[in-house]
Amino acid sequence: MSLQQFIEQLDELAQSARQSFMGAGDSEELESARVEYLGAKNGRLKTVQKQLGSIERDDKPLAGKKLNEVKQEIQSSFDEASERLVSGPARTERDLRIDATLPGPSQNIGRLHPITQTIDELRDIMGRLGFSPAEGPEIEDDWHNFKALNIPDIHPARDPLDNFYLATAKNTAPALGDNPLLMRTQTSTVQIRVMEKRQPPIRIISLGRVYRPDTADATHFPMFHQMEGLMVDRGVNLSDLKTVIKLFATSYLGDEVPVRVRPSFFPFTEPSVEADYYWNGKWVEFGGAGVVDPNVLAAVGYDPDEVSGFAFGLGVERLCMIRYQITDIRYLYTNDVRFLRQF
Ligand code: FA5
Image (cartoon, rainbow, N blue to C red; front, side, top):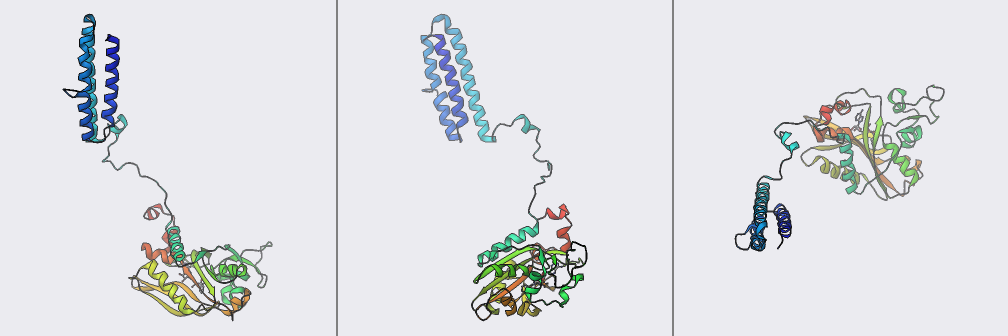
C-alpha cells in the first residue's frame, strides 16, 4: 500500500469516527461506536494499523507518525462526545458570557386585555349553549336604541343628560322625533337589528361597547361593555330564561358564587328581572333580563301570538371584575402596564 493511500484511509476513518461519536444519542450508542473504531482487537483503527507492514520502508516513519496523530484525533473526538452527553451541547463563546442566574432584561411580550379575555370566555360559554355572535353599530339611531325597544318619546331614559347624542350638521341639539344619532347606551339595539333581518328561531349574543354619561366610580364607567342575549321561538318563556342565566352563571362563576334573580322593570321586557352575584360582602348587579315585550316583537314585524322570546344584557366589566378579583372598574381603563401585566 502506498503512503498516500494509507494517509487517505486514516483521514476518512478520523472523519467517520467523529460523525459516529457526535451522532450517538446516549452512552450505550457511544460505547458501541468506540468499540467499532478504537476496539483493541477488531477496531477499524486496528485494521488500518495492520496495513502499516505493507508500507515502503522509507515511508514507514511518516506513516507511523500519521497513525499516532489520527489515533489521538479519534480519541479526542470520543472524549468530546462523551463530555457532551454528560453536560449537554458544548457552550459557545456567547453562552459563556451569559449568567443564567441573573434576572435578565424584562420581556415586554404583549397580552390580551382582561376585558378581551373575558369577552372570549363569555363567547365560548354562550357558544356551547347554542348562541351565535351577532354585531351592531356603536353609533345608533333613536329607533334602534329607544323606539323599537318600547321606550316612548317622553321616557326619561332619552334625556340628553343621560345620553351621548351626536351633534347635527348645524351643531344644534337634536330634536325628539328626528331619529337622532347617539352612541348606543345598550346592546339591546342589536336585538332589533337582528329581528329586523331574520325570522325566528333566533338564538344570538352580541358583545360590544356602550356609552353613558355615568360618573365613574368603583363599579361604573362612562364606556363599558355588555353581552346581549336574545332567544325567540315558539313557546319561549321566563323559565327558559332562568335556566340559561343559571347555566351561564355556573359555567362562568362556578357553584361557589351565590347568584340571585330578582324582579325589576325594563320597557322592552315583561316580566323583567335583574341578576346579582354576591362578592366581598355585598350583592353586585351584573345584568338585566326578561321576556321580550309583545310591543317589541310587533315593532319588528313578528306576530306576538305566534312567537315569544327572552333577552338579557349583562355588564362585561362586572363579570371581568369578579373573575380577576378587580375591586375598582377604573383600573381596567387607566392603561397602567403594572396592572395589565398581571393578566
Ligand atoms: C340594560 O342596559 C338593559 N339593556 C339590559 C337588558 C337587556 C334588560 C335585555 C332586559 C333585556 P342596565 O342599564 O341595567 O340594563 O345595564 C345592564 C348591566 O350593565 C348592569 O347590570 C351592569 O352590570 C352594567 N352597567 C350598567 N351601567 C354601567 C356602567 N356605567 N359601568 C359599568 N357597567 C354598567
